[in-house]
Image 1: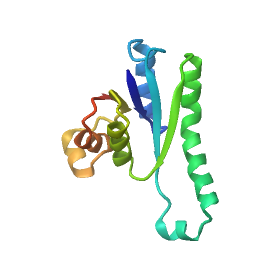
Image 2: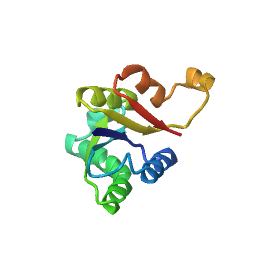
Image 3: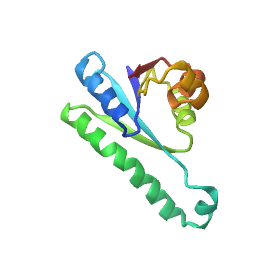
Length: 140
């Protein structure tokens, strides 16, 4: 199975990884994993005065902060994964990657706020569910 794992480095990501570790059917060498993290873009005015190399190095460093413990998680279990860093709105990047990449499952952690909070504040998980036809496993 081709699985996209959306991460942000938060406690919700850690809880999601713990869930996956506790359920052998989701982990294993029989699956193909891609881990995605979306870095918030630098404001346009600031980005305009920065050298492209400096900006790219910043985005890469921010993504690597999140990927480093996750690489360790997968390595400890003897599993390989590809790591994909995107810049922009998280929900859009995750949903688009899941759709265009032909993934069979998207796994992501969620805060688990109620419907009213999600309606007022919105959430990445809610937006992904609304914009993605790929099956999503939300872990609270």
